[in-house]
Amino acid sequence: MGEEAEHSANPLARKLAHFVPLAEADFRVLDHLMEPDERFEADRDIVAEGQVPRSVFVLKEGMACRYRTLSDGRRQIMTFLLPGDLCDLHVFLFKAMDHSIGALTPVRIAAIAQTDVLDMTVRHPRISVGLWWSTMQEEAMLRERIVSLGRRDGRGRVAYLLCELVWRQQAVGQGQNDTIALPLTQSELADALGLTAVHINRVLQDLRQQNLLTLEQRRLVLLDTNALARIAEFNADYLHLGGAPEGIKRYFDQLERTRDGSGSLPSESVSGQT
Amino acid sequence: MGEEAEHSANPLARKLAHFVPLAEADFRVLDHLMEPDERFEADRDIVAEGQVPRSVFVLKEGMACRYRTLSDGRRQIMTFLLPGDLCDLHVFLFKAMDHSIGALTPVRIAAIAQTDVLDMTVRHPRISVGLWWSTMQEEAMLRERIVSLGRRDGRGRVAYLLCELVWRQQAVGQGQNDTIALPLTQSELADALGLTAVHINRVLQDLRQQNLLTLEQRRLVLLDTNALARIAEFNADYLHLGGAPEGIKRYFDQLERTRDGSGSLPSESVSGQT
DNA sequence: CGTAGGCTTGATTCTTGTCAACCGCGGTGG
DNA sequence: CCACCGCGGTTGACAAGAATCAAGCCTACG
Image (cartoon, rainbow over all chains, first blue to last red; front, side, top):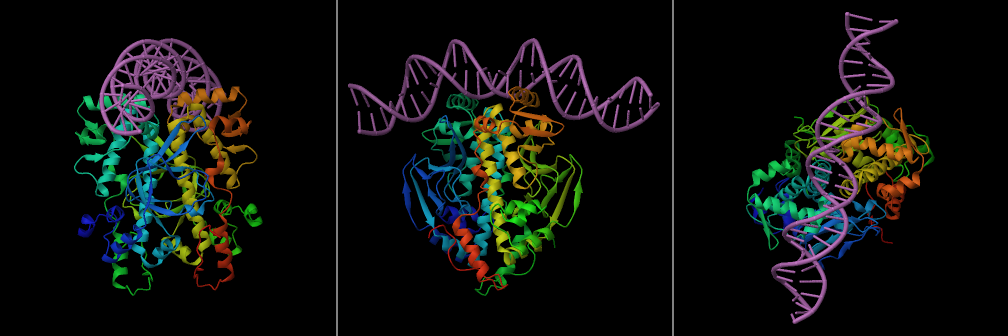
């Protein structure tokens, strides 16, 4: 991660910097992007199922989730959205939302104009590719969630989710060591993990009794990260925080050298081959 | 769907035509893309976890899946890949695969050169956007699978998966009415749905006894689609097969009119607003 | 002070997993 | 040609994990 990124308060910039080092200009663009400000109270929908996708937005503060409600009222949370997470960069390709996005805490978002998105693909390829990377990362998290719901028991699911949240929070510069803010109720955890609130409660009791974690006043501390990772079979590789492949980096280096403001792309292939 | 698309044997073309009508030139490009031929036997890995992502490929024939194996040997299948499905269009942004892709039947694929992919984004924007749409669709399927694993019981999961497979097969022109080829063993179904083969067996028995479906000789017939859809709470909206939003269509219409071979894009916003 | 939401706990039920055995079939090799 | 093997499907008995129902507790908040 670049030095600027580590000190930036911009969570999106911090996240993207895990992929490629950002230039001064990139920071300015990202800061500009995050300027618009809109607020939602906890438990309000930011976007509702069935709605026509309107704008792209970035979460600036708070926690939100993508979810769907079944006919009997039960709910499944698909993903948690943290500061720096982008919503629906490409969803304008759909006629209607197939799920809702709800605020779990009071939330601040920045809506991004369609033109700014288009502009970026032309004028700021590094950011643009970074946003793709971020989309791929989101997809990888969905796949990992499927593994969790399909093949892990209660303990494993809880341990896995908490590990993921700690890693993600740290990737955007929130929380320290193995401590993060976790403003979720037990029934929200249950809705995310395909369990009931009662069962989540018992699993948490169990993990607490083994001195693996503490969770009180919306504050989560992982006391034994290794043990938890073992229980969850958690391996952070799927978050792909280790930087872009060499091919991509070379591509951007070349882009930097041939930079003429026109945004023309170097012709060298982007693939990993030398 | 355009008339050409309905008669095309190219499953990728048939799929994309659900999004935007394709032009003559588009069909030629897609056919060219599908020319390379590579074969894998059943139960072989096409791509293995940990591997450096090499090439993009399209599945031409057979069935494959993305999966991950846990330390105790249990497996979770994340998605099924059908003819016309594209693999890892953007995965070159990652250093290593976080899951494997395995052939479930003998399979034929077409590897696509990196240069062809880049070429397409510049010269064939309609296809390029179609591939994005297809990526979004895949993501929507992952989310829907999460709902299934999190909140549906055995019957619901099986019913849901079979409905999805029938819809997807039909979207690429395979199978007719409510009949498709389903070359999966019960333990493969189990691995996809987070259940055991024994339990899948019992659920299938149950569905058969109620005259909801038949499944023999790798051939699936849905006898009562409505009842199954009700059991699964299946709603095909998440597949987004109803065509692109008006804004996108207008964009391409304009693209057609201003076409000068340079691939320059119309400046009008792509958003849904009038 | 009363209330509601979130957390905790116990008793009980039900879905699904586990273990084990058996069947039927297609392929293979003697 | 037939015996054998292995895989996929089927079935039964039992165990385990999670849901359900119900009640009580705590605390922030009006």
